[in-house]
Length: 450
Ligand SMILES: [Zn+2]
Image 1 (spheres, helix red, strand yellow):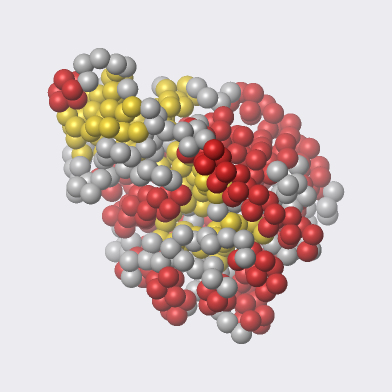
Image 2: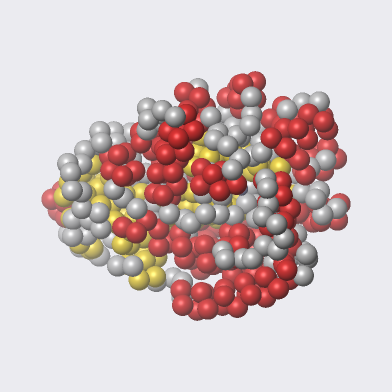
């Protein structure tokens, strides 16, 4: 397929913007990027797609999300409003996850995947919980990912909050699913779904994990995805339990490392930052969620100054990563009372370059870049800049101009998932009608827990 007559934003090493540009891909992989003229000559036959001058850029990557949170939209939470994040966990999330059955797990994933295609997010790193439907939950999500055509990294959040049986089931689910992915890759290396799916080992957070359970987890895996210091309570708990701060405690178990993800890291101190830097651990930042939970602003300016790989996630908020990028910038400026904080270039460093590095941990070919040899994950935006656009000011066009609403077409792994805002792999009307019904049943079970 040759997509031509586009303004191509490559996000490659030269950070090129190619006016009247074109991208050619064969099967799931990009094989050429260049000018219209050149590529039309080079590929005279085959399928062509005239982009009509639209922006063509790599699909967005979301470094930390929760598909299972989809049914929280509009949910009535009984009792007085939660006063802090631990209360939000206890009243909302730890009950909602228990109210989900396998059908609810799959349905909430489908809802998020539709939203992701619409907003041009083609790779999602999910962190799943459904404490009364643990066995097979990652397969239910994988089925939805398979249908969608998107790329995803899945894990189950192991926790002691519901007792040892559920904790062991969480460990089993991670181990089983990691094994499934490994086996499928060996048996069927050319399978499209297997090259779009990856697994890691999920852990909830230090504050709901005992030493014994952590020992069981590290015996099973080398890379992890865990929440870290989202609220001071996580640090207080770790100091009381282990005499160490959260990152130190997790590091001593071998949970840090260049393939591990630590979400949030809002309340870590300088020594914890040093440990994350020394181990090359990925950090993810979710500003919309942090503001909603009133848990503070992570010191990402400092982390980025130290070249720590800080990535951008959405923590289950809408899959419009353009919005998450805008909010990331606003939160730092607001938190520091200084308009010089962060800036669009640093936001792009996180959301584009660091997210791409993180995706590189899980997938065989590069993701999040338009370059020969990278996976063909591409989005077209009907964004026509009203001011000059150059590679130097591109980050500011992204922050102040582009939005998920501009996404006109979405391609992942060389498959067209949405064309001219029409979804081609997922039946949105059917998915939405079903999710409304399944959400209602889930809500009933949730309310019964009060
Ligand atoms: Zn999270």
